[in-house]
Image 1 (cartoon, rainbow, N blue to C red):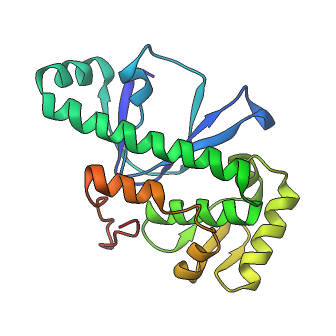
Image 2 (image 1 turned 60 degrees about the vertical axis):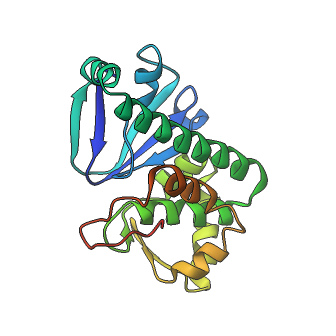
Length: 202
């Protein structure tokens, strides 16, 4: 990466792995975060792919200019280090969830994280994309969606998942959702509200 991206809308996924089915998502970001942190902290490049899951708008800044700005402004550097910590917590919790939780629980967690970062209640994603994000086979995603839909937490239709009951969806995460969101707010404050004024992660 040569530029840092500061999203105003949309969803971006960081994937780790060698490509294809070997990859899985390790972090999700939207208007609360930035892309390019790895290159800012170390050499450009790295074993990650950045994928847009939902189209949106972002501010772009050359990484060299951002590095120079951090050198001249300690408060900016401190802010980015706080975000680096919050992102690290999210990555760690994603690893724990992938190792310890069921597909249904992990799907509920991811849907809540995506819901935090968008306006409205509809998330446009196919079963195939969700299977790549969570690193499971597509039939497993289909079963998990049916289970959440059967409990009326979501409504799934072709290419769209609608959040119906957020509190119950959070219960379905079995504690896998919440810690990164709490730590983000502790070190950075409440996430920026969307166009509809919501701050769902708070």
